[in-house]
Image (cartoon, rainbow, N blue to C red; front, side, top):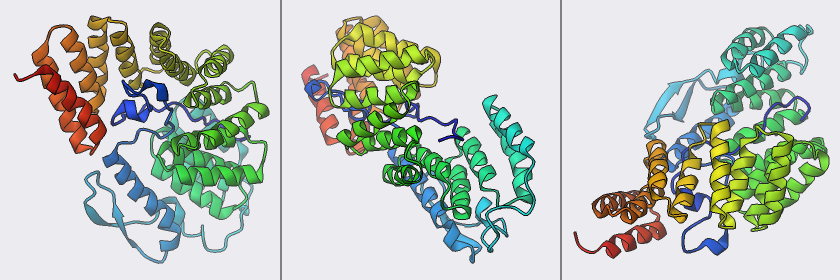
Length: 397
């Protein structure tokens, strides 16, 4: 991925039922925590919303002869008709037989300026100058892809996909466009599509470690753990100096309960790049697999120090502290998790257990009841049974 600055990191998105999302459930620990990541925690409601929007971006090229496109865009999934120019895909000239190279060579400094702004995290600034350039050079695939990357960085995944689709329409052999689109698809939870695009990128350029890394993460989410490890191994073979290749292999080993290998890989990843928060997070999960609670807490806190938006770490810190009978601190961290994930029954059930240990049976009952309510909403019968069993253990109020 020669053009790439992208990397697939540990998700910071809210999760519904974080224990099952990670494959770690109290009482069933021998299964080991499973790393279902990448896109990773999109909640059911949001997943439906983005799935519909994503389907639109995929259909857009086929709907250029229509102005009115049926599009489900509201989070509540209310259908609405929207007059759409198909964003970058329309561009008038884009699909009218224009050649894959513009008649006039683009000034290199526009591309470099946009790259420099992206490196400074000024994504909107980069998008602005790319918008101006692309409006006059609609068939420049390279610029479309760079704008797609900038859009993805600000969370506009749909806009990014539209730009990647347009670039691939212009140049169907554009390896990096497939590789970076695969990354966005995985971030959005479209794992099969991510695998397909990463596979296409690999077919075009077999030494793209980032494409193997992205496909490995998609395979983890599809529960194809052996395939995930094979791709992670390939990524490391291509570039063993890349910290993210090693942290991805760490996660693959952890999913297969190969905790010693996972810890070794993540430790090497951290040595290579001490700012790789996903390596600390993944090693923390491996330590949980070994019931090494103190080490897990240290790694999750380091991951949070590097990226304070990765609030899923609070759950695992609180759970580890609970295991170590550090109930006061566990309650503080459980509260921090629930503050950012108030639709996850697991957070409420964990807090209920902590409160019971502190002698607060009324609080425990309230939180366990909320956990049960959320599990029923999510149709998670197994977790609902856990919550009900806990409530039953409290006896009648």
